[in-house]
Image (cartoon, rainbow, N blue to C red; front, side):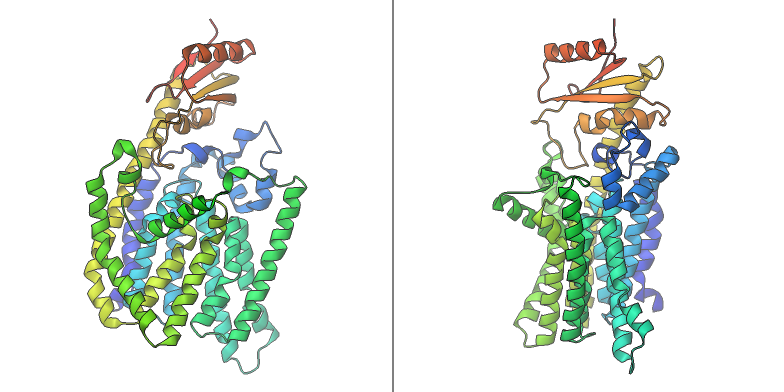
Length: 493
C-alpha cells in the first residue's frame, strides 16, 4: 500500500536511466552552440563577450566554464543536469502536494502529468534548457520553504528571531531562481499566494510577504534596467512581441502545450505532417481533459467558496509564472515556466473527490500514452537534427588536410525551408554556423570562424563571397544550406 502511495516517484525512478541514456545521445544544434552553457573557449577571441551574461546568469556561466575546461563533457553534462533537475522538480512537487494534504492519488497523477508533459520537450531535449529547469527548481524550493516555515511560525506561540529568519529564507531561493533565469522573478509573489490559498497563512501576513517579494522584484528590475541603459547588459529586441495578435498567439500556445499532449510536430512541420496521428493523440488526451474540466466546472458552480478561492488563486499563480514570457516572447521551451502550477491545479481538482481520482485513472493512462508518443516522436526528430549537424561537420573535417586557422561560412538560410523549433532544424542551424566543426573535432581545432547569410542560393553570389574570403586570408570556405545533407568545401586554387 505504501508503495502505491509513491507510484509516481517509482515510475520516474524506473524511467530515469532510459531517459538519461536516450537524451545524452542528442547532439547540439542551433542555440546549443551559442548560449552561455556551451564551452566558453569558443568565444575566447572576444574576452568581453560573456561578461554581461555572466552577471545575469552565473549558473549558466559556471556550467559553460566547466565544459570549457573539459569539452568532452559537452553536451552530455548539460543533458544530465537538465533531466536530473527536472526529476528533482517532480520530487519537490510531490513533497509540496503532500504538505498541502492533497490525496495520494491526485498527487501521483499531478506529478506524472508534470514529468511527462510535452511542455517539457523544449527544455529536456535541448542542452541549453539548463537555466529554465533550475529556475523552476529554485522556485519550487522557495514555495516549499515558504509553506513549511510559515506553518511552523503560525504554530509557534512566541516566534523567535531564528524562526523569523528561517521564514524569510524563501526569498533566498527566489534570488537563486532569478539568477538561473530572469523569469524566476515571478516566484517572488507566488509562495505567499499559494500559502493563503491553502489557509496556511492569514491574508494580512500573505499580503505582507507578497509585498516583500514585490520589493525584491522591483529592486532587481531597477538594477537590471540600470545595467542595460549603461550598456553593461545588452537588450535584444528579437525577444519581444509588439502586436496584440502575437501575444494572443503566445497565450494560445502556452495553454495548448501545457494541457494538450497533441503531437504538434505532426501538425506544424510539413515534411512530417500527419494529421491522423495528431488527431489520435488529441483524442487519447480528451477523456482526461474533460474529466479535469468537469471538476473545474463543478468547483466553479459549487457553493464551496474555500475550494473555489483556492482554484482561482492557483490559476492566478499560473499566469504570474508565465507572464514574463507572455510579455516578451514565447517559444516551446518557455511553456515549462508555469507547468508546476498547472500540475498543482490538477492535483487540487482531483483531490477534492476521491471517487473522481479512481475513475480518472483509465483516462489518465490514455493521456500518458499520448504524451509519451509525442515525447518519443520529438526526441527522435531532435536526435536526427543533431546527427545532421554531425554529418555536416564530419564532411568539413574529412576535407581538411590540417586544421584551418581561419574559416568562412556561407549560410544559405532559405526562409521557405521548413523548420520546427529545435527539433527539426535547417542545415544551417544544425551546422551551428561552423561551431559544430569545432565540437566534432573534439575542440582540438582553434579555428577562427566568420560567416555570412544569404536567403537564397545564387552560385555566382556564393562564389564571389568565397573568393573575397579566401583573398582576405581565410584558409577554407564552407557553404551550407544549399543542399539538404551535404556542404561544399572551397579552398584557394
